[in-house]
Length: 399
Image 1 (cartoon, rainbow, N blue to C red):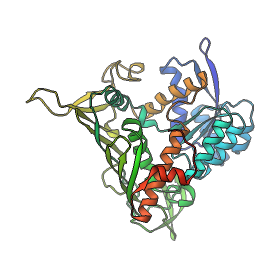
Image 2 (cartoon, one colour):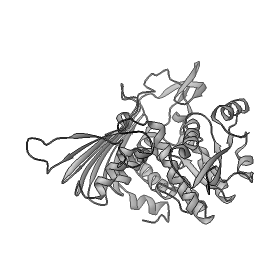
Image 3 (cartoon, rainbow, N blue to C red):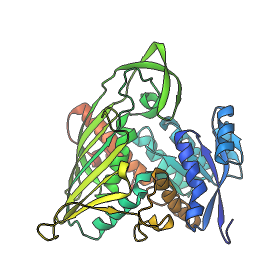
Image 4 (tube, rainbow, N blue to C red):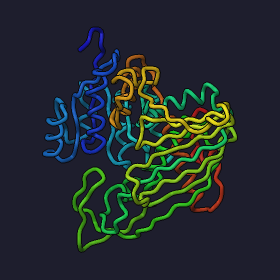
């Protein structure tokens, strides 16, 4: 422990895909960054004792629990990190806040807007630090795009077109894993993928005003899952269940500042393993980014001389680029895991200083409202106003 470093004793609930990613970030943040607060891998929690015990040993956790309630009740835990399926986020987060623990939660924040609002009320009432994991904000190239937009280099923003394209469930024989269960996750590609695009749009462009969307489920039945891990699984050859979430969602958006946007989230885009991309066009220039090439930001400025105009590629790995200077010399690129490490810098600073860094549960509620608006629009086949959705839910989210 460094001189004057404050310990933040973490209790992580969940130990598979995102549990591994979060564990890595906690272990690495103090290696790369001089944070005044240092996470301590105090305890990890999972229902399968054999599995969580093995994960604890492999990932460096000091202890483990099989009941999240026991984890929250422990006096040696300061921060509860929730990487469980969506249907348990609210219950765990509210209990953690009421126990005086800080809360870090995976996205989407909840199953419904009302549920997310109860989570926000709980963390605010109990005065705990809260944050939601929209880690793609923390790619240095995305942070650089934010700086260009805020500085006025792009001028007034006209467009954002965002896609999140995957193809991992195109096989009709792929099993009915929890990410395909409405009871567990609330929605499919919309909440799992479009939630990230929505957060990036709010971060870079501004608040949504209204949306118009469609949702589609291409494979209506799938084999009942027998075993799953991460984005893979094994299904029954005899029994099938109904798919009740969307395989794909597409929607249009108008923003409060007059910009317009198109969004597409699908798990049926063959050849796209993790195509999280956006392009933003303004009156003075444009930027575009692709998670599969995450260190680079393509930029275009209208005032470049004639004959030399066009997109140029900026490799955002120099010391001037946000977070990049903590890692390697220029062009020695970083990866997906470092977006979470960068996020942890902000979370540790928030806990040290007593504030909730962005994106926090307020952002989570706003994101949930947009997801709900898209779902309503898909049902009614009409444009849906975000103000109306928030009013219906009787939320008190601050603008």
